[in-house]
Image 1 (cartoon, one colour):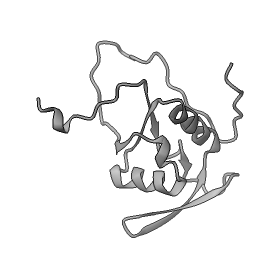
Image 2 (cartoon, helix red, strand yellow):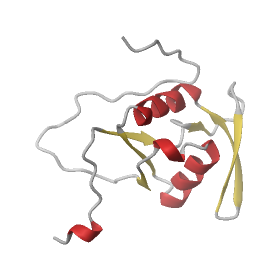
Image 3 (tube, helix red, strand yellow):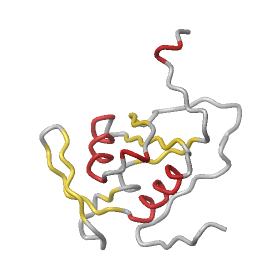
Amino acid sequence: MADDWVFTFSNPTVFFDVDDTLVMWDESLPGDNVAIECNGHLNHMVINKGNLEELKRHGARGIDVIVWSKGGYDWAHSVVRALKIEKYVAAVMTKPFCYYDDLKNPLGQQRYYKLGERYTDDE
């Protein structure tokens, strides 16, 4: 295996989905809007500030943040640019369609925050 093509993430890693996680498709939801241009299409979406702040907190702590989307790399990259979070994101990728592990749920939990939820300061 050649090391010149391998991406190495030696820090703890966290993954964020794009659609209905960082940005919401339902424009009637309360919150700030963002215009996202991707491949000649313009989408107006609502920012999920709770998850966006969580992403920034992870990135600011030196945790490798990976942003992914079933919509593909171009869409995920366009959202990262539109939200101006490039400095917090280590990589952007298409969402995996499956994974293999010896554990049924290797992380033990999934975390997500609904639009409008509040966060408390870290202890």
